[in-house]
Picture 1 (spheres, one colour):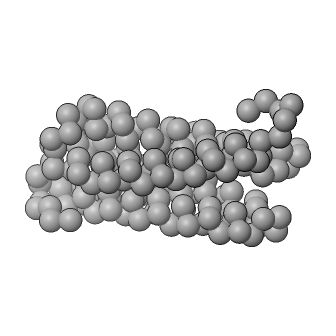
Picture 2 (cartoon, rainbow, N blue to C red):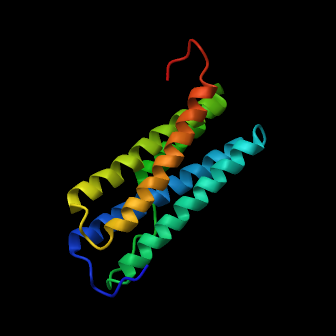
Length: 161
């Protein structure tokens, strides 16, 4: 990334901060899912750890861009996402198992994808950070589609999604 200091407008920095937070939330959600799956499905747990690592990389890249613009980057996720992870744990503990984890993960993927799309639309796609955001969105779309396919393949007949 060849970005000079103070090249982004405040609106771009605000979006980068928001996207950093949702990437941290996503990373933490994937880590939590991996932890819940490590005994029952190590292969799926490993995939969740890979997605967590990807989101960690995206968050780091966004934090670097914010810092390059003389701002302090967001370093934590949201309270709402922590509550969502607790809900995922409860659903899993009550017998939802892999299906509950995949359902909640797919919902989270919908949220991060929508946030990137909203940012790109709001910024008009012309800000210096938009190429990075488009690249991140493409990676989010891939993981979204993978999680959705896994969720659908695990879906049990007669159960609501």
